[in-house]
Image (cartoon, rainbow, N blue to C red; front, side, top):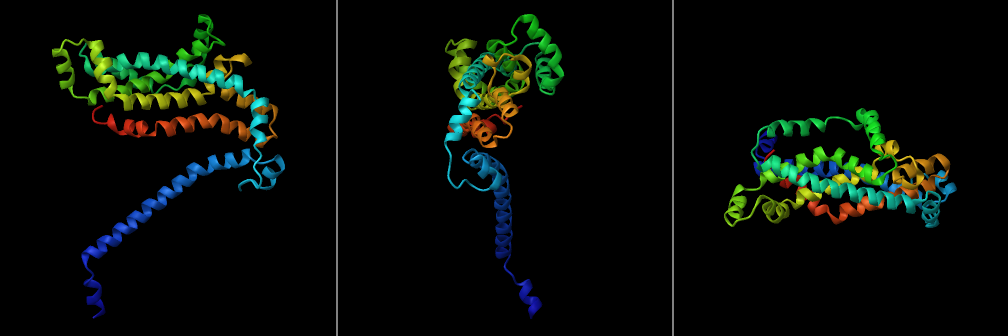
Amino acid sequence: MAMSSTRDVPPDSSRAFTAALERIGIYAALAIVLFQTLYPLLWVLFGSLKTKSELINNVWGPPTSPVLDNYIQAWQMAEMGTRIVNSVTVTALSLAILILVVTPCSYALARLRFPGRNIVTGLVVGSMLVPPQVLAIPLFMVARDLGIINSTVGISFIYAASIMPLSIFIMRSFFMSLPFDLEDAARVDGAGRVAILVRIMLPLARPGMALIIIFGFIEVWNDFFLAFLLLRQPEVQTIPLGLVNFFQQYDSLWNLYFAALMITTLPVILLFVLMQRQFIAGLTAGAVKA
């Protein structure tokens, strides 16, 4: 009788039990990933609100009495005001150049038929595989010959060029996913290529634009390598260089260093919070064709 009772278990209940186990496993995995992602940020936040002695005695826990004065001292000692202005200037110029160049290039590769189009696309994809460290010496020599060392405008063009291959690849996928009937209808109404791109294609490709803006912002805002290579004067240096200089001068003041890190991280978090819908839409909307 015992054997028969185990065989008479309804299949629906067994499937429900299996689905519940799968759901528990998924939520457990998501909880682990969430903890690994958020706790380092919370740890830096907690450290930025502690005194130096409390940070040594209470490394992992929250602060007993938050010290907001750490942010004021870090702002003054690291000269954050000047470096934030430089980072904002370089990032804004880089993104403006990137959008102005990437939009027509990706549209041409996606919608126009011309000889060598596949070769150009292959070169764009291949350039994504070249690390910037390989180009350090020739890039420095070219920047020196052009006179753009210690120039925020010059490094903005270099940043835009370094992000351009991935951005063209992303926007090309978005333009290829749009139906050709829209262009045909606009062409019947007398619209030219530029009008079709500006008035019809770009509004539909806004998720892709948001995606490359977020990627480009994070890449330029957090970059240390190119800034260290091309920006030598303190008055034109960006935030990553300022953080390194601050840590080299005050390596024992970890609470102030954490405060400076939080100041530089907040713009990235704010940008993602404001554009999270476009970011999620951009990750999925352009995946129809490649």
